[in-house]
Length: 510
Image (cartoon, rainbow, N blue to C red):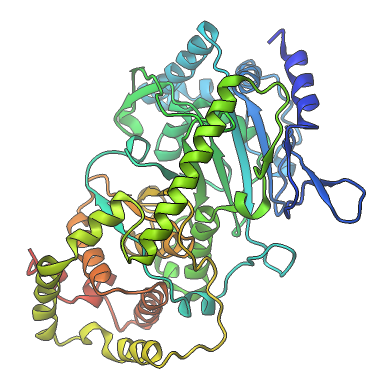
């Protein structure tokens, strides 16, 4: 902490030549004075205000100092709620020990272990914190907050979807954007008595807590992406059963900026929505919230187009070179694969193989035979026929599908029962909305962790059937809208999967 003034001074000095760009649309860009030529994206420590996209890049050393200040409750808190900023000092974390019991003690053990680690050897990487915004009104940003027609008219195919019945999001093996089931206030109850998915993630990756210093609450059209937070602790259990389980050595590689290749996006779902979650406005809100988080805004804003980091060392040059070579190779392979109608990553190839040849026919026939004898609106014939006729006839009423191009990298989505559990959302609805958002955002795959939820088998069957029949984003959205309308009118009481495939719950497909 004694070095805090020097570290902070160096941070602001380096920002002036830290990340230079030639173009972009960030609200925090500075201009060079020559017309509208953009010369600089502000990456310095500051409040990232609502409705203003921007990015903050902090060294792990600076983050450690900021967290030490929070530990000793040095940040003024009188005006934080006025600016919709979450709690940042650690006094509430300690105050809840008597009420939250053993799980609270183990949260504190994670924090103390972090400080022990950084005191024994300070990490030298950086962490980026980005506010992502889909503007409600048309402006210089190429994508605005989508309306229902955007989704219903999308012709983008649904991306591969793999159900993971065991394991956790943070332990996935493929490179993916990991979803934080967030509170509107970043971190939720991490610094009080909360101990579910978001709070646990903030304990095992304590550098995430630094974002609570400068991120006001998220609005419906916003998300927060954090890249590079290192993991320091193992854990066991969940909620009241949470336990610190010892040291964790993070072996994930670094990217060209010196960030760990741990990418996390915070998106907040509706809380206790009840039957209201099937209303049109709520469906739009949830799918757009996920879409905002899953869409790669750094490419649009140009945050990392040209890097000229002051004092960059040989190792960081090597990171950048390896990253650029790997990215170039990925783009070439991905493009060729798309031309050959073969996936550009292992998961896509695995899914295509599962749905190819006799296997595909077998799966299709199994479903088709059961659907043919099912009376209740067999696959919603009228809707499906209308979609098929439109596709065959090449009809296009002017809707432009955004992101209709092969993904430029192999970074998929690792998620799970977002907005369910403590928030009370419908698991089938939320899984489909996330699938729609990931596909529309050109993500190459979704890894969906069910945490041994009872609907795992139904989800596997349903997503396999959808993929093998080649549905698009617009087709699945149309089914969700029709189902939601009928459910609100009291004409349907079955869950969504059973409504589409009436016999899925009767075990006839296994």
